[in-house]
Length: 75
Image 1 (tube, rainbow, N blue to C red):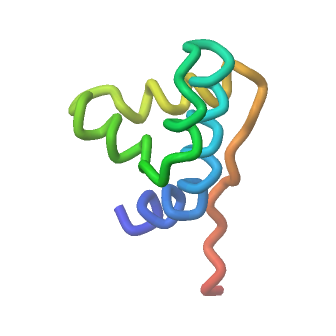
Image 2: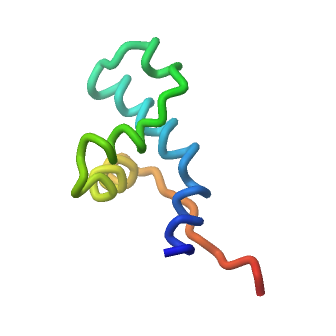
């Protein structure tokens, strides 16, 4: 669980920025929402208890982007 949380922390800024970008291009969300300090991952977790990670990963990878893999830096 610690590694998963570390991976999410590593990618959280990118995921939020990417979800905002996808929202502007595909779903016509307002620019004000895109520039808001809102954490879209937390919002998605709150609204979609099951499947939020799958939705997030699908949004990122289906458009050709990728996320940083977790690398254990302790050893």
